[in-house]
Each structure stands twice: as C-alpha cells, then as structure tokens.
Length: 288
Image (cartoon, rainbow, N blue to C red; front, side, top):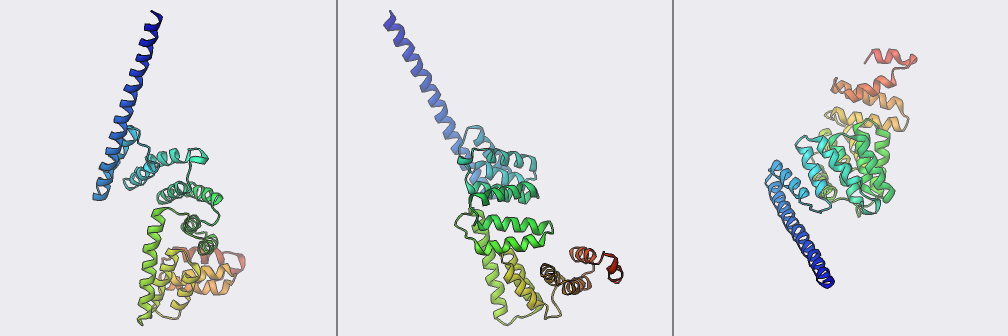
C-alpha cells in the first residue's frame, strides 16, 4: 500500500512539472512571436503597434535584455515619458554584475532625449566608473553641459571624447557617430572644392561639434570670422572659447558681433550681460 502511495505521489509531481514546463514553453514561444511582431511593426514605422507587441512580450515573460530599453525609446517617441522612466528604472535596478555598460549608455541616451539631465548624467557617470575612457559617456556629458550652458565643462568633456575610444559604446551611438562623420566629410569636401565662405566654415564647425571635436570646431569658427557672412553663432562660439582663455575683451567683441547680426541671440546676450553686470561695466551693458 505504501509503495502505491509513493508511486502516486511521484506521478503527481511529474504531471505538475510537465504542465508547468508546457505552460512556460508556450509562454516563451508566444513571447518570441510578440518580439517578431514588434520588430516588424517598428520597421514599418507603426510605433504604437510595436509598443503593444513589446508590452505583450514582457507579459509573456520575454527575457531579451534590451527589450525594456527598446520599449523606453518607443515610449519617448509617443510622449509617454512616465512609462519610459519606469522602464529605465527597472533596467537600472538590476544587480551590478547583471548590468552591462551598454545598458547604462542606452538608458542615459533615453534620459537625455527626455531632457532628464540629472538621471542622464548619473547614468553616464556610472558608465565612466566602469570604463573611464568611454567616448560615448564623455560625449553625452558634453551634450548635457552644452544644453545647460556649461560651456567650460562641454569643452573639457569634448577633449576627453577625442582621447577615448569607441570600443565600449552602444550600437546606436556608433551608427549615429558614423552618420555625423559622413556629414563632417561632406563639409570638408565642400571647402576643398573652393566654396570658402563664412557660412561654409560655420557648417564645418557645427559638424565638428556634432562629432564631439572642439578643437576642429574652434578652428572652423576662427576661419569663419574672416568672412562678412559668418553667422552670429560662429561669433558666439568664439566668445565662449575666449572666456575659457580669460580673454574677456575678445569675448565681448565676439558676443557683440553675434548680437549685431542677431539681436535676439539669447545666449550671447546672457554672456554679455553677465560680463557687463559689475559696477564698473554698467555703461558697457547700457550701450548694447
């Protein structure tokens, strides 16, 4: 009798295991199907359908490590910043040993897109703790500094970009940087063909800025300053560099040039006002 009871118990356990395995196997298949559906929808530009499929894949227990990052990027496209932030928080909450540096970089880029500067900066800093010579992290910090008007930090971070490598970087960053380099090459060819104007040198400078090479951008802006058609922004960036060298007279001259060409150039106005706001400089501000 006891033997029969043991056999029944063992068989019952086996049935439960088989059922649970079957359920898990079906869920995994369904999750994989939803991932395929999402990829096809995303390729067609149907982002709402892609979001729905990715969400279903998560519900079925899909374990693609980059799934939540993909979903976060799509949430941002749809303006669902709260959902994107929740996705990123889930990614960053993983154990340190399970968190890849590319996850940190991708999360930081999504935070940056949302304008969540503190979270983006924290993720880039975390990546730099892992890999101090990560060009993508330094480039991200440079963009954040630029967006917030911290141009000294921007220049310093861009200096680190040129000294770092891209071996540790996200696929999105490498793809984007390749496109920016193609743009830089096109601007360089434009000048080599004899199209030397202030606007052409300015475009070259902005292409260097996009790639994260401040020295190249500065050289292009210097060249643009020799032409009457140099855009106001070229003078602004020369003023920024002059302030970093503590050459306040040249900085003031360039900021005034920028305002002369574009009276509503807010960043130049802010820098000039800051420079001329002291007791001994109020007359200079009065004559802007």
